[in-house]
Length: 328
Image (tube, rainbow, N blue to C red; front, top):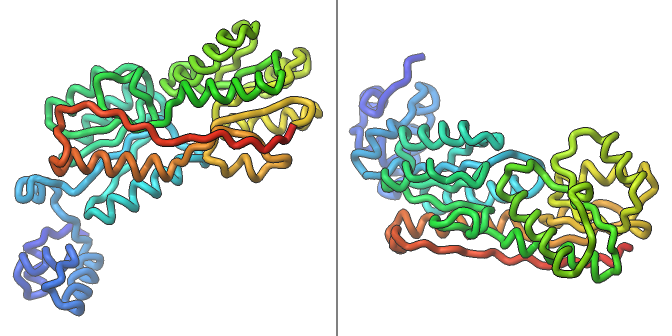
């Protein structure tokens, strides 16, 4: 069926186009029965709002783009739920993209966002490269970088935990338990969050004079046999795991090797869900995807509504905490 515009929909319903527009927007001046009739007809006749028309009429598309480097079952769902919840409350819709850690794809997504006239962008970067973000700045589209701390993405505003400090604290937790043979398991080597957490891991080991080499660092290991053999052949007594996704890959290997907590100490950076479902529970640096989502979306809307000078650069750090289950 051909998609109708608002004028055609109004004609079918014998209503004024402005009445139809207000009914679709749940305007209180429109009777509830009229609103329901308009919405039912909009679904039946496949009506879709013209975003470009709305933009030129209101100077707003009502859309916020969220660009993330990847999707997993941990952290991301709560992050997106929080962003959607807050934006909906403020009258905005959300469109979500995943760059799959591909810089070129990230650039294409930003071009889509500009052509769709989004009001703002929340972006988790695929890499430390940021030159393409100038397109958003030049187009006066406000954006906030999320989950990537400021040291790596200056001069743009960020909302994140301090990834380097979180990894440092996690590694120090193992050292204070007298673990000196420590393995670090990390994600994609080029991902900016990996770089930040790797920096924290290495800095802590060096500050505490713990000997390590590149052999003691694993990146995005898809070959479970290779990781299993490394764990079997090397007397590690502590493991820092960068996130829940990698914990879920590593934990079964440890069980197979009989390297359960009590024999080997584990710590990860987590939203606290998976770590409390495993037995024994896993100590972790906890930070909330939900808190990050609320903070980031609130921060972005301040820019959009001009409550904050868009030329200002701000870096908000959401809280994280050490959760010690003393499972070893």
